[in-house]
Image (cartoon, rainbow, N blue to C red; front, side):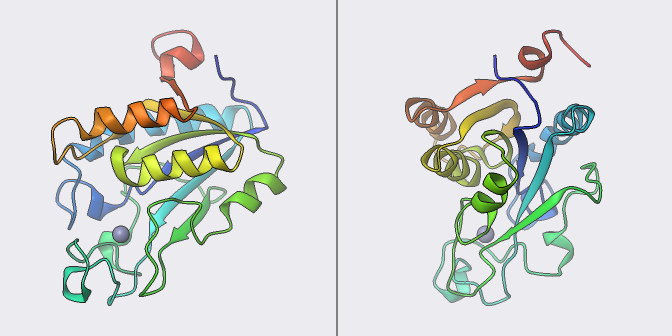
Length: 197
Ligand SMILES: [Zn+2]
């Protein structure tokens, strides 16, 4: 089983107000990942492993917004309330923030796209990444696939992701694709070897 040590990082993908119930582009029950992510945060802190939190960080005229030719309602606009991390997520000051898709023309589902994440991880001698957050079949999947391409041992935190499942089966297909490309799955109990910390 994948071990959390100083060569490991937790990557929390896009747990922002707009992607949670009540937000502009909500993942149904998306906020349910937060209590479990908080447990992972504590676990990673205990062993001194790195923690990253990614965020969509769009300008108001972003190309992914319907009014600018995209497919989504406006969401996660830089500096807006909706772009904030969900207040229940227990992020401390030492968590590294990765902002993505910050230019009007630039879209990025993956936390590796157009950010310094890869180099930052390599620079810290991290080779194993544990990924959770929102949404399973969009930004989580893209981040997992890019982590694999960059050569990281990549673990999907099955109990800390939530998808939209616009078409029934989207989430299942996404998980299958991640596994086929080489990702592994884990849950909190499989990592700590008991049910609850
Ligand atoms: Zn976006």
